[in-house]
Length: 161
Ligand SMILES: [Zn+2]
Ligand SMILES: [Zn+2]
Ligand SMILES: [Zn+2]
Image (cartoon, rainbow, N blue to C red; front, side, top):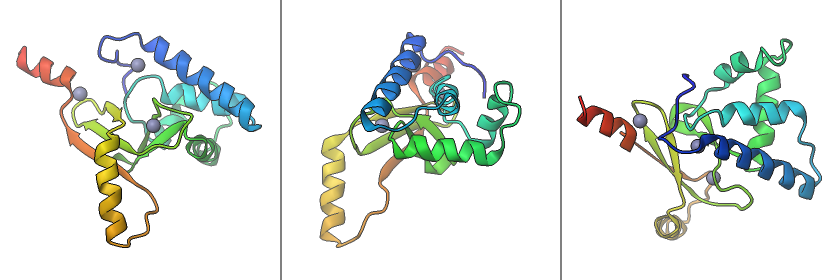
């Protein structure tokens, strides 16, 4: 995982926003935003690429040499539970949620070149999917649409070669 720039936007703004919103929500919910949980969230937000648990463990070690896989998984469970991050099932990895604070359906656009994942709300699409699922009488455990392809940055890079 390279500390890549993310599509020419103010990414520090993304990081600051994500951390301060998480901090605020933890306060409102009365749950503890421990330094470790904060650190793991910050590492996930280092860029918009999906990151795997074992990569997080390596990234965490400089901050916490005693970190173990269970340390990372417990922190990830907390962050998932609070809705601060999403699991990307098809990559077995995680991304920061760009719309924390409410339960929402997600459409993930996953770039197969740079592994950047863009989250879209797609509420009308998801409503149609929900209606279809309901008519099938199916009980949903987890719902996310994951679409693989090439992002605009990688596509532009390809065109310029
Ligand atoms: Zn960003
Ligand atoms: Zn989200
Ligand atoms: Zn890309």
